[in-house]
Amino acid sequence: MTPIILFSFVIGYFLLLLGVAWYTSRNADNESFFIGNRNSNWVLVAFGMIGTSLSGVTFVSVPGDVGKGNFHYFQLVLGYLLGYIVVAFVLLPLYYRLNLTSIYTYLSQRFGRAAHRTGASYFLLSRTVGATARLFLVVNILQLFILDRLGVPFWLTALVILLLIMLYTIEGGVKTIVFTDTLQTSGMLIGLIVCLIALLQTMELDLSSAWSALGEKGYTRIFNWDIQHPGYFWKQFLGGMFITITMTGLDQEMMQKNISVRTLGASQKNMMTMSSVLVLVNLLFLILGGVLYLYAAQHPVLLNGVPASGDDLFPALALGDAFSGTIGVIFIIALISALFPSVDGAITSLTSSFCIDLLGFRESARSESEKKRIRLLVHVSFAVLFFGMVMLFKAINDKSIIQFIIKFAGITYGPLLGLFAFGMLTSRSLRNRWVPWVASLGPLLTFCLDLLSNPAYYEGKLGVQLGLNEWSAAVFHGYKIGPELIVINGLLTFIALWTISKKK
Image 1: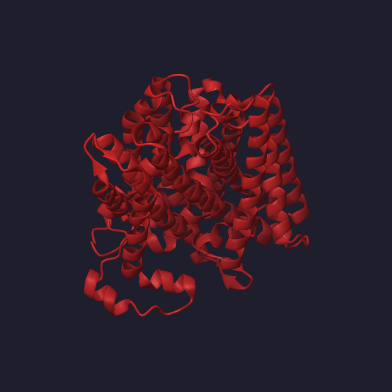
Image 2: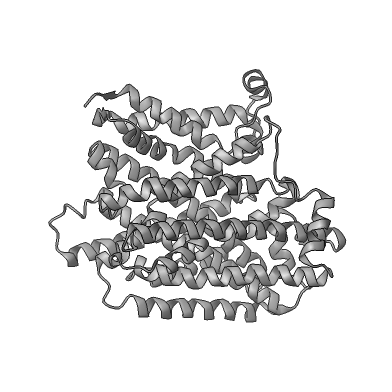
């Protein structure tokens, strides 16, 4: 199928989203934008959050990672499930009891304004980098397989996509996103299932025989008991648990949708339903990845004359000549559907957090019309920032985005984990003016530990030799820090906060 026909389907999909946005944003106000007037349907929120939790990175990187990591990623997924239980039954009751619009308002009530701003600032940093990394991955695929052939430059692709996302979120906010995420999650899951069935039929396999073939190749190995390996089970499991607690339970984007549901009970049903479905969906992505590598072993998948692997394997196969054009259309729609819930929600939540946490909308005497004008300006500003970050990722051109996102989240979400844990597990107060400085110690020390534990990772990104291999061997004896990075970070932040605390 020609790039022009594929591109026409992309435009048609955008127009559908804009139609949904127009319908749902009628008579929308600031409360509609921030928390959907607390009237969202929990079933729609649960289904839509599946797409937000997975994103385009999962759609491409998780299948692509099976070639070198087998099914070890599923250890993280099991940890995610336990993390969602903590979010549902520990954090959500707190947010509903305090009737929060921004979850970081809790830090203000518990410790003071400095802690509030510190928590919000780390969220703004973490979510901006994470969302733009996901956006870059999908824009790069669209560019490589469609728009380069039409002579459209990368910067224009990124700009147009961000403009369209901004258009359908700028008025309705959460009220609109609840519906668009539902549509987009449907597109992503349909694409996943159709692509998997098409591959199995091409190889004349059913799901049972495919599983046996994957087992023979060793792809179905889930558990890793080598304590020095980054994929060691307890690293992955505990890391997955705390990644979920921080990147869902302490993340304004994810919680903004949850607390838009009218009651706590309905919000908890949303969380547990979504987490159960996520386990199954992630397993399907891993099976798809294994089948992709089985197919590539029999029929080499080339990209620019080189065998495709990693993040490039799935798109190279789906958009190549081996399958019908229908599969290419379904893949593109599914990929965009996987991307948008993580980007539109990110821009909306970043706007909400900036307005409420840093500009103090709740305490402000500004009129509603003035607040709306400022909110629109902030929303556009974040879209501009996203564009700049995507261009930065293009310059870096990292081929393993999912590993980067997990590592960056482990470094930057630590202060949120430490602050919330300190607030909920102790009754001590903090010397407020020291909080921003002390909360930065955790990420700094964690980064240094990770650098010393994994010098090869950073040497690969920087393209220089750091000369840390002997130090790493002497200190860590081959141990590689993995997803438990966020646990270490939260613990270091907690200890640092204790040093500036006092009894109430």
